[in-house]
Image 1 (cartoon, rainbow, N blue to C red):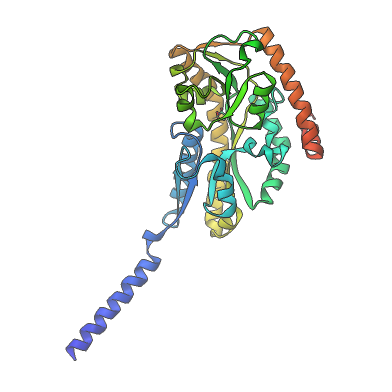
Image 2 (spheres, rainbow, N blue to C red):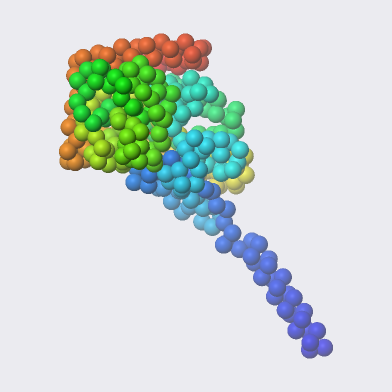
Length: 328
Ligand code: PCA
């Protein structure tokens, strides 16, 4: 009798433990969030803050874990990883998708929108169609944040476009590749975590990117000049898989949306502050920072005009609608 009782008690205890494990707080859902850029970058910092805010609001129900610098998933695969549900959320450079549809590359048309105010207006004009295109891939935008204006880095003076001729030029999307071609340079696609290595080994010799990325990779280790060409402000987008989002309780969906709206606002502000702050760090480390010469600026504007025509042709009706919205 005593023995039976003990066994029964033990059985009850075991069942209780299992039940406890099955619903216990240790089993909060984890959302892995891969990003392409290093932890110190302002986009990554902003996303980490987004994760903190969601986690604080979600209590034990959801934990967003940020994996920077392509450590979980490499940049070229992040979009499809979110689309397929391999991960529920992720960040990538929107214009990387311009090969799927030129609309995604609207923000990388040189000189179309090369100030923060213009970039904001261009995004207002393109947000709806961009969201609709991503929705077809089961993706919903959480927030969008621009990089500072893009400038040219080189190891030596670039007084005219001729000085770019034949340079091995690091690119990050179709527009930078096309710009390099039109400038007579030799394009090579390299992701940010691999840039230092690419310069160190001579695989690339020049690039166009922001003061932020220049500082993140310590451009002064390989390069001497930065030209503030203010060519465009490309944007990063953080997206969520729609099924993963809809599987959340209404309260959690609200918490994610609230944190996303805050991240978008904070991100634009941080980006505006980045430009001067990171340009100063380039200067402090011995990079010669200058405006492009009149000759270089004129050549780049010409390249920009060619690329704008090409984009308008490729982007068709959607592109025309974006331009019309943007200009009015
Ligand atoms: N940095 C990213 C994209 C634009 C930027 O400023 C890069 O260089 O890849």
